[in-house]
Image (cartoon, rainbow, N blue to C red; front, top):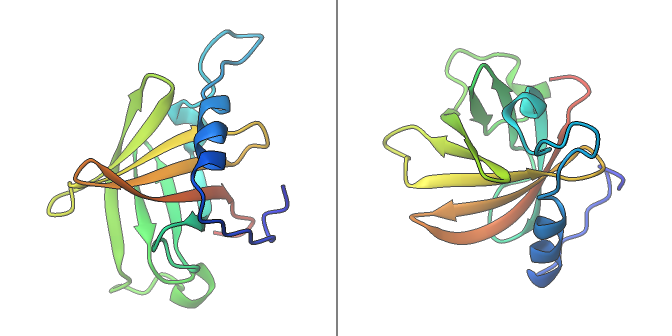
Length: 141
């Protein structure tokens, strides 16, 4: 998949099928692919369906935690008051959860690694799924 190509679709059946396929295991090591260590780095977020995330959102992940940045990386330049939403990471069976810190702990993103190296995500608020998104590595964080 071309990370620059935008394909918004309203139907979630395609994403449900992709979610199931992405829950696979590494054939050599026989371990889940969707593990915390595969998430280290900076990730551009692309909305697939639902109201969020906005086009300029990106995430930085490292050391079992991370931040969602709500300004473009090229624009913010490390501003001291740049809006960031911190989250913790938890390994689950077949996926990784990004659990936002209080007062936003009702927001949880579930991620599964796809074969092409991108992450397929389901955004949830208070246990209800409201959006699908994809994350791909950023060239320059």
